[in-house]
Length: 205
Image 1 (cartoon, rainbow, N blue to C red):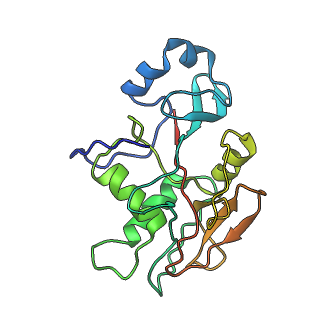
Image 2: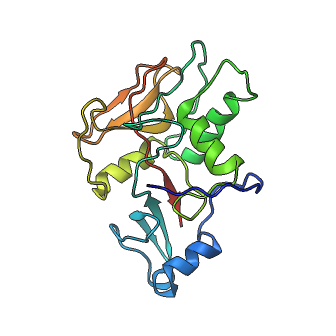
């Protein structure tokens, strides 16, 4: 279970290579000099892609559980008529900002749970996830890389089909793209008020 620490820090810029001071202390000099290995457990997450030279992509160990109840399923959008495009296949951070902004100000007709709930908790309030910052909902290609790395051992739970949301819009903008970790197939969400898929955050260190 993730632990959150509320604060009042300003919204940070997009995640950068190298990570925070806290992360560097957790990682140690050896990892930063010699690089990371896929599958390496960093304490706050697991490496699913290594760039060499002391930088890597990390996936959270646990599914996101904020603002939803068991079994922690999210919906893409819970109101009608909100076709906002989050087009990036490779930049989940940018997608999440787009979806969050479309859900503001309060009272907007658009509430994109996939972008809004994580952004509010992880950025606006300055919360930490697994003790570090910089997490976001992966874009389609990023989520595919997580799946291909096989670092997540998914246990099927009745009702969710092993699906995880990316932050990339579907063919219809009112729907989001989901990846089934059971068989590796992609599909678009049903849309309005459908709690269909889990979320697993990623970040760069």
